[in-house]
Length: 340
Ligand code: NAD
Ligand code: GDC
Image (cartoon, protein in one colour):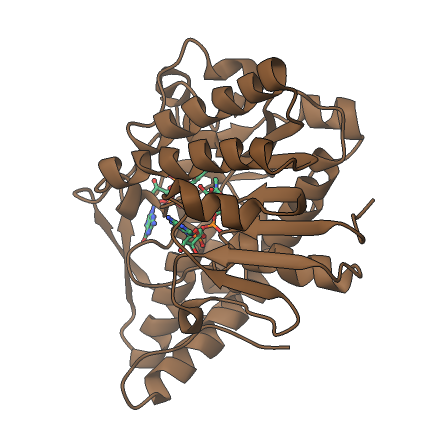
């Protein structure tokens, strides 16, 4: 059920998931959308003229009040985030997203919003339960006792709990999903914040374009992860927002692969084989992680189901086109936005 009448606010609307959510809401017939992001408009990944677009810093309480004014639904997707290469080196910046989450919850309450969605992460899970490369399936209860990803993960766990207490103490309708590594077109694919699927696609595109048959991989390549295609993420976000699920719940694919298998798949799509150079000095995070989907199946009789192969084919093709466009650009800069 999409809210097609009341105002829907998407924070982080200039980013990957926020931009895709705005695009999806429009397609579903929602005509009253406000997208908010700190990035200048020409850096938004997707931007639509028929949406109220606001360029504002949501670290500030006063701007959160403006963002939340008149909102029926708020999808709070704004955060300072990225893949392992970013979150391991920017722990303070990641923790500062607590300002966005604190102020957005306060403003949602103050402005009388009906519903609030918070995007948490698999990075809240206890590191001791992710030591094996055998892709341990993480159940929601595995977040405790807490031993989160340093910085980013602790902030996510804190903000999950704050969302819960705003619901319990103040009666604000809050829903929380723990996203497992999301990928797809319009996602960050270069610049340092990109996650493994986009990074590997870009490296393979580049190796092919430059006829340099090598690829550098962070770690041994034995690390395991599951990757969720953006369309599954969007469907899950709306299902969870519309559900009676009160506790934070996994939203991720349960198709785990090693990073080496991920590279195999991208090479297969590109029709190339590359010599692998393993760089053990780069950030690697946990050894293994998968999404246990028992709870989401129980509540929603649904789970993300788009295969990694199908999702990667679309993502590779999009990154390929972005790469070609960037190479052609005189200043070497791509503006990743579309208008309606
Ligand atoms: P993204 O970086 O593409 O989008 C986040 C957006 O928030 C960016 O456009 C950024 O400019 C904006 N933002 C940052 N600080 C801001 C501020 N002070 N004021 C206003 N806007 C600000 O990331 P994404 O992949 O779209 O992630 C969306 C949400 O999902 C985030 O909360 C993220 O932590 C969470 N998440 C994402 C993944 C994933 O794999 N993509 C996994 C787990 C959780
Ligand atoms: O960055 P990420 O996708 O994040 O990395 C997955 C694994 O892939 C890591 O072990 C990393 O070392 C390896 N890897 C190999 N080569 C490369 O070129 C590369 N680039 C990147 N980025 N990784 C490479 C993420 C967080 C997110 C989010 C999700 C939730 O952790 O970074 O912010 O919250 O988790 O699931 P990942 O999966 O460790």
